[in-house]
Length: 124
Image 1 (cartoon, rainbow, N blue to C red):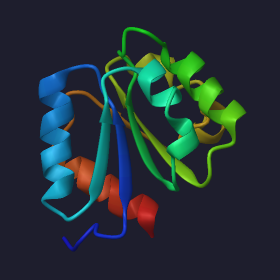
Image 2 (cartoon, one colour):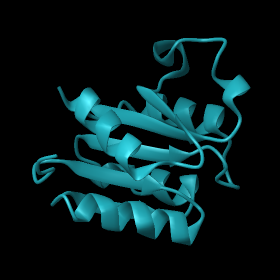
Image 3 (cartoon, helix red, strand yellow):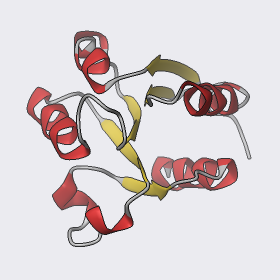
């Protein structure tokens, strides 16, 4: 599938097991990965954010996805590709990704191969 050695990921996922498994998967393809257990902890560190991919679980307790995506947009972060991990498909079907300020959505449970394929599609 190739290497992600030039890619940087920010995982904003509350569930430690999910966060760590996705981190290990991405690192196995040589990606650099930073992890956050909450939306607020990520937002507190946006001054250090470089262009990359934000993988956000919409079930993070401290911020709902609309608030999180709004705060990301307000901060004008450089060249971020946003993937939302979602368990409630209906929250995202009424608008296009551009209207919701995300680039792709993956429905849970997340399949590792599908995640990698989505990243490759967004990368090209």
